[in-house]
Image 1 (spheres, rainbow, N blue to C red):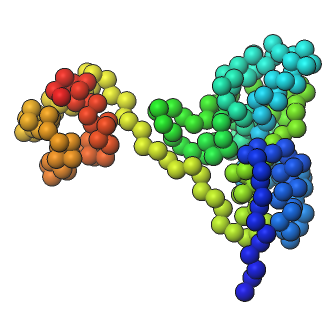
Image 2 (cartoon, one colour):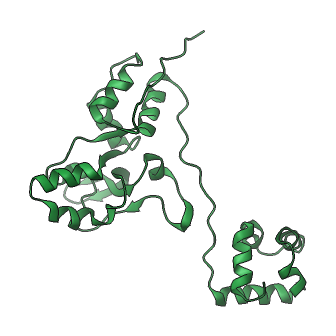
Image 3 (cartoon, helix red, strand yellow):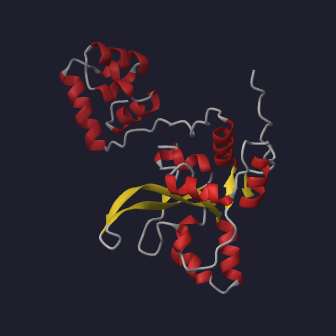
Length: 239
């Protein structure tokens, strides 16, 4: 029976790249993981590349480049990490073939980069792609601090090199459908035309959802959560 690998010990959420590699290699993998491996996995889209927002700000202020931080990463001030991730391929006339494409995001955690949705109906990763932001951070001709290796990405690497299952991304959270008052009233009019009454609208939401299912109405109405459906009815003025 194959012995379990040495556990990955990660004292902080975002270790420097060198410290993160040291932590991974301390688990006695079959081969020593080096920066060149991370670079290859980044180009393949397996992992992303990360910089701490505070590290960039501190370095650029020290170098007299504070104005550039506001210009390039101003939207990231409230986030912890700047992440660059491969998104796909595009045709390059200059190169005469396909080249990888990258996107830059502001996130608080590495998990957020892979999550599709989060609370407050906002994407967990703020896309910073614009004319002033390179799609690969290494292409910016400005001084950059040492990258960091978040715990989540280190776990993925640890799992790969030890033949374990990779950690799942942050769970997808259900979000409320964005519906206006006019749309809400139209929904209520539709329901009323199908025999729903004021008693249904003011009664228990689970009972209303069961009735919707029995009548075979729009799946959206039966799949949204209790709070979303209640909000729609209130917006329409019937609850």
